[in-house]
Image (cartoon, helix red, strand yellow):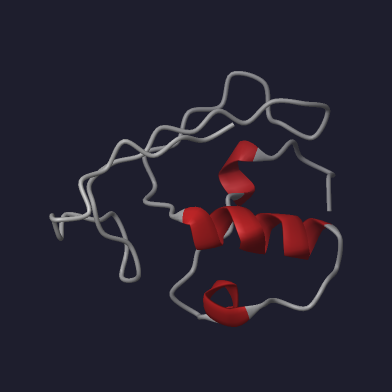
Amino acid sequence: MTWDEGDFASDRGCCRLAAGGNVAAIVAGGAARRGAVSTAPYDHYSVLRTIEDAWRLPELRDAACPCTRAMRDLIAPGVP
């Protein structure tokens, strides 16, 4: 679950392709690593890339950018 309360007038994004400040996210489910907390910068493309990698799909648009980090530190070990 993620929601965006960022201010698009700001350029304070977490990552190269993001703007608008910080966005909170909660990862839940069988593939989520229990109790994991990450301070790594992610954006909406990170969510997309994480799903694409898990399902072995081709990465689309900015999710394919080498600058986009998948959210691997929030996924349980052994989950693709």
